Image (cartoon, rainbow, N blue to C red; front, side, top):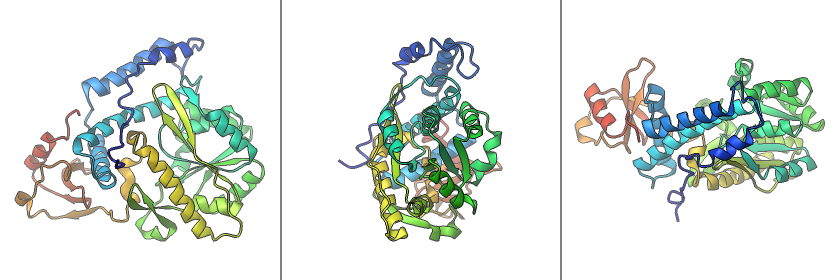
Amino acid sequence: MSSCRAYIGIGNLQLRGLTRIVESLRNDKKVNDMDTVQDYTKELQRLHDRLYKEGIDWNQTIVNRLTDMSANMAFFFPELDYRAHRKIFRDSLWQLKMDTWDLKLFAGTYPYKIRGWKGFLQKIRAQTGMICTYHFGAYQLINYLLLRAREPFALLVGDKVYNEWEQRNTGLEKLLGRARRKGRFTLINATDRASLRKMYELSARGHHLLVYVDGLEGIKYGKRHLLEQVEFLGCEIEVPRGAISVAHALKLPIYPMLAVRGENTISIESMPTIAPVAHSNRTLFARSVLYRLYGWFGSYLVHWPEQWTNWPFLQKIRPDAQYRCGEWYTLEKEPYDDPMQYGIYYRSDGICDLYRKRDLVKFSIAQEKIDTLRLTGYGGSP
C-alpha cells in the first residue's frame, strides 16, 4: 500500500467524548480565566460547529495557506486528489484551534488523558539528553509535561520566537516564566554565537535540551550549505543539521518523540534512543540521524497529515522549490481551472495571482479568470 493511500486521518474529531473532558474538569473553578466548565464546553463546541457545519472563513490568509499546502501535498503525496487536499486542510484548521486551546488549558489542569508519558519520562531521567520533537499533534504539550514533572530543560528557538517571547501571554509562557525564575527553564536563541556554550553548561548541570527538529525559521537559499539533504516521504528535502551536530559535540543521547492527538487523548510516541557515537565523523552522524528521524516521522504523517503545522511552508526545504513570477501568455491553452495544477495567491496589496503549483510560479491574470478558479474549489467550504 502506498503512503498516500495509507492516509486515514482522525477526521474532524466529532467530540464524542466531550462529556469525559467535562467530568475531568468539574473540580476546577476556572480554565484560563473562564468562569465555568460549561463556558469551556460551549466555546469548544461552537468553534467545532463553525468549522464543520458553517464552513471555513475564506480570508486571504486562509486562501494562501490552502494554496501552499495543496502545492506541497501534491509534491509529497502525488496520489492524493484535490478533494483529499481540502479535507486534510479543513482538519488541519481544527488542529490549529486545538493548539490554541492547549495554550489556554496549560494555565489549569490539562483535561486530556495522556498515554506513554511515564515511560518516556523514566527514559529521559536515566540520562540527560536532547529531546527531539516536531510541530505535530499537541506539540507544545512536551513543555507543559516537563514543567509538571519538574524536569530542568532548555528550549532552543530561532530569532523570531526568541525576540517575540516576552510579548506572548499564554498559560504556557506564564508557567515557563515561573520555572525560569526557579532555575528549571532556559530559553536559548539557537542562532546566537554563545548558544553552544550555554547548551554545554546547561546539559552539564542536568538540563535536557528540547529541540523542534522540523523548525524552518532561518532557512535561506543563500545558506544551503548548512543544510543536509535527506529522503522524506519518497522525496528529497534539505533540513538543518545544527541540532544533531550539537548532540554529537556534547555527546548527548537523542530522544525522539511525538505527541499524537486522538479523541480526548494524547499519545506520547517515541523511537529508541539514539546514542552519540564516539570519534565518529560529525557530518556523517548528523546525516544518518536525520534520515532516521525523518523516516520515523514520515510513518506518522501518512496516517495523520493534518496534525503537522508545516505543510504550507515546506517549499523552504524542497530543493526544487523557489517562488518566481512569470508572464502568462498561453492561458487559453492551459487548464488553469484545474485546482490540482493551479491555485489563488493573494499579494500584500490584496491583488490575486494565478499560482502554478508544480513549480510555484505566480502569474498576473484577469480577475474573471480568478473568479473561474474560485468556483472550482477556492473560497467555498469543503
